[in-house]
Length: 392
Image (cartoon, rainbow, N blue to C red; front, side, top):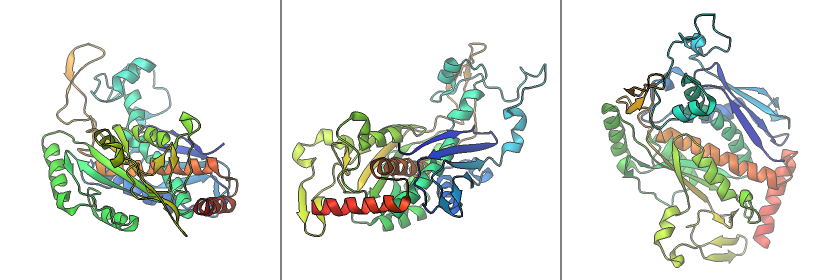
């Protein structure tokens, strides 16, 4: 059946929760494995005050015993430390009679670029806080938690991931393609903007500062690289089993992401086929490989065994401190949109989210394709697949 997860929780509610199903039994897993990723998500130049309020840590509420998965559903909980200030506004209990229309911070002014107005129309909410609390990027906290579990699985079977920022506000980084994935990890963790090019790091930070000073926001482009995936994962047989298609959907499902590229991506439209496709070679002991990796580790919806390269385009966050004009849904009068605390740039943090959603899709594809009730057997099946592909 494979892996799946479901998240629940509101931005200012008591907690965020995810239920993860389909993990092999006997896989080593500790809360520290997840907390490391949650901490990485909260870092990055341009983050707002919320990152000082919340220090996200996970509680593994089920599915793990004495450091190993049980094969039963995993329940992960991240408490909101700010909840005590929001109990009256966001509480689950009904309000006393007469106070229903006097809810503090009721929102009737839709913010452009957000889910506010469309969600209110869809579900009939007159207070758009009912929409923004769930549509908030705060939900990515538990998506990262689920991704951290997937990353643990991948690491244990020899798949490594790294993410980095390639562009912020039009300022582009130069990528040294000779760098190993370990070297990329070291460089990105040191950089406040998760950029591997020190020549543009300060420029990116200055652009973020300028946007903040102007009450504005800026977006950018992030890249995720995964090495070690065995060849032949995914499928050419049906459209919905193509792994590159699943990765594209996962990236665009992240809040504020509006585009995705695999390999050279849109650049392929501007090049002849001879400069797009990757020549195939074979070497004893290594097996098949590609002389280049312009297609980003995919052919026909399946992995080639080459590094997977996926990029996502993040628009500027739409919460502006100099807000755009909108309409009050009660009075229909024009107003400046409401302001919620936010970041001036969340691209560095979004790189971590992208890394974890990619990790989830890769892990889920492996679990679907190989016997996965027991982790030891699962890992052995993947080892055999690599050996089979080398000797094919």
